[in-house]
Amino acid sequence: MHFTCPECNMSLKADADLAGKTVKCPGCATKLQIPATFEQPAPEEQPDGSADSGGSTVDDYVAPPAREGWAESDQSNINIWGSIGYAAIIFGGILGILFAVKNSYVGSVFFSDKSGTIVNACELFLFCWAFGILILKMQKIGHQRNAMLLDVLPKEIAPEINKANVGNFIDHVYNLPHRLRDSTMVNRIRKSLEFFETRQNNSEVANLMSSQSDIDASRIQGSYSLLKVFLWAVPILGFVGTVLGLSGAIGSIDASDSEAMAASLGNVTSGLGTAFNTTLFGLVLSLIMAFPISAVQKTEEDNLSVIDAYCNENLLTRLNDGGGLGGGDELGALDQLSAAIAGAQREFLTDLNDLSKIIKENAEGLEKRSAQHQQKVEEGFSNMIKVLQQDTSSAIEDSAKSVTRYVSALDTGIRSLNDVLKSLGQQQVVVQQVKKKGWFG
Image (cartoon, rainbow, N blue to C red):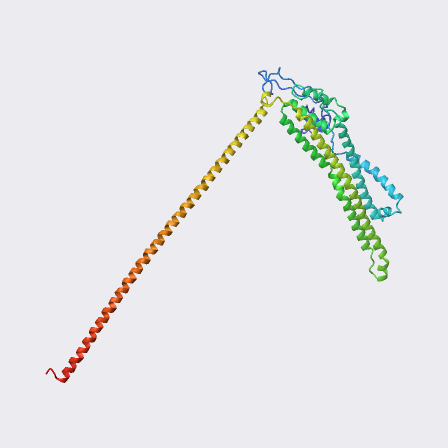
């Protein structure tokens, strides 16, 4: 939606969701009211008679009809002031009931003393505020359920949705009752149909619906932030009352003498009762709140799941963008090209995997043959060492025998020589004796 600021003549644009709302101009800060009528701008004519979109001529361009948009209300977050109003009514009713039964155990727990009553009243108001929020959220959930009964995409118009009849479906959505068409399901279908009218591409519409579903889910989660704060704030207030009761009890002890201390024991027990009563009251209220909050949140999330399923089954399955390439869809061509490249890449990786297996098998065979060759070399070398050891042993034995024979012959010769020397020695003795006797003159 395009419009112009009357003060600074700045060209502005806004989503159809903001139709009829008041905003500030970003240029001069003047308050402006966005027009309530959403008009599609016609493409600007070029000097050669062509339009901006795809180079088609002005005569070929058919602009979508101008439609009145509606301001979408937040289907998850509620009006805070409305919830406070409900809280005040509930608080007044419960407070009147407690005042009527103040002499009972429940009344005595609530109306313990001044400080305890103030803390309990704060806990009760937060409790009532949480239920006020839940009441408004249940109203919104009921509105969503009523809108789900609408036949938003009737098959009487056409069994499928294509470029030629998508305008009829959009017109049908705009003719729905004003009170029911402002719902999550109807708004999502309207946005998807208008997007499909501009760009005939099923995948882009699916992405738009998925993004919108994520936005709605995040919005639902965020709408329970205040209730989650109440779940821990009520027990915390109870503990605050406990601290106040304990401090009052300790402060009331008079330790000046034993009689004053005994007299102050009554105030101590009263302060302890206030301390535990506020904690008890806060824990009970927090426990009561937890169950309806969880139940309402689950109901709202289930409704969103039903809306997602309805859009997927009744809208996406009926969209016909012209059959990809046959319909002249460039993005479809890119999708098919990407799919073909991915298929070729998968085949290449498969062949590469098979080749890797073959290389691995050959490497394992080569390793085995290398191990066998190494084993044979080691065996041959070992045999050679054994033969060499045997030859060396034989040579050593022969040498030892030769040495033994030589030593034996040498011993025999030495003995013979010794005998000869002995005989010569004996002969010399005889000659000396003859000389002594003078036989030779």
